[in-house]
Length: 325
Ligand code: AMP
Ligand code: MG
Image 1 (cartoon, rainbow, N blue to C red):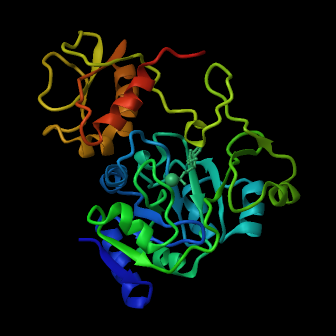
Image 2: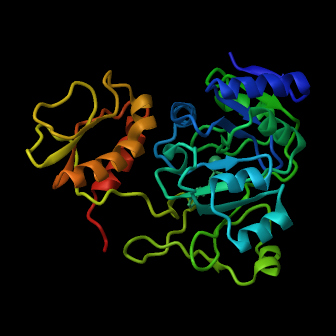
């Protein structure tokens, strides 16, 4: 059963305790209802993808109660400080480089070196974020493929029984998603149009490139979910390995193949949620450790498509795909 909590002091305290325990709590913001989890807890973040039935790991936005807290985890440049001053709290998300000591789980940012951060403009959401006292990852609180929810009832329509609680703060004021602005590169790039207009952003920081996301072959990507350069290891990746060669590092799932000198176990019991929580950490570790030991590649044991297996396999296929230079 999903608890419905009223956004008073008791409800906010309860919702924050659930989040700190690793449970999923939907909460209202000024844009849409978000499906929140402790962003520093990879298992909790994996549970978001499971509850939403998402077929792939796209990077999630991390929510903070203040710009100060956000800039603890990412490196802010002068432009970031400028727009944060002008539009936070509010419907603007900034993509910035992670700090080296950033405690946010790699799964939250889909393994990328950058992180999307936002301070929502809703008093109940801010109260919850303050009480939780940790970054909260939250995509929209709907099943994959359905429209974003703008009331607690919409959330229950899609996620009843799949999440611990929903903090009911009434209908959302803005009703569209946040504007996503990438400030991690040389020039600002608009990744998604949303609650803050491009004109207002331009007035604040000058020219902004639009639709500037390209894939490895230089093709412009239109879908926001695709406008991200996905993390791929430096070593070549071989999928569905039934054996492991002497010079290969191994990404294991379930009972380990014999002969690997360097291995990372995603889940000894073959649990896809646990494996999802450890996926990006595993790829990075094997890349570094395998590289150090002179490995020529990473062999990946087969992972079934059930549960989060579909999303794991989607990401592994991209990691294994030929590089476009
Ligand atoms: P949602 O959480 O469903 O509202 O969507 C988050 C949006 O932010 C998606 O369009 C993501 O592709 C984008 N996003 C999140 N993190 C990053 C990142 N590190 N780099 C680029 N885009 C991002
Ligand atoms: Mg969504």
